[in-house]
Length: 62
Image 1 (cartoon, rainbow, N blue to C red):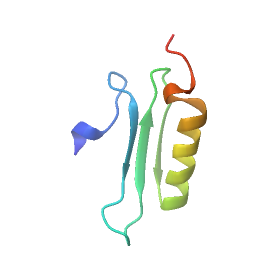
Image 2: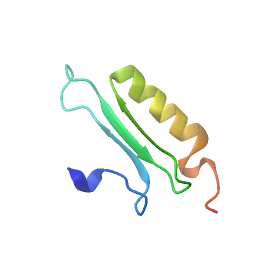
Image 3: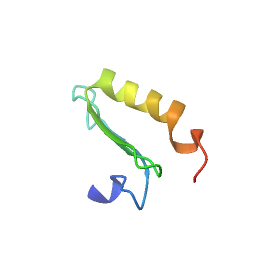
Image 4: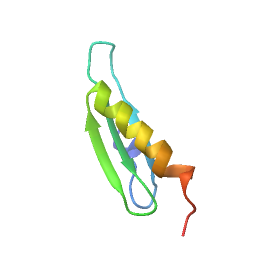
């Protein structure tokens, strides 16, 4: 699954939850240089909220 993980050249957000009982994991890399990882459902939820509010399409590519 390494090809799904975001990188500086292919920024994005990747979330994984292999089963309902397993903790979610997430990683994000933005074209602005910011990056973050999270483990656990609550932390991944905060990662997604931060991505939506501050990265991805929330700011212009410069």
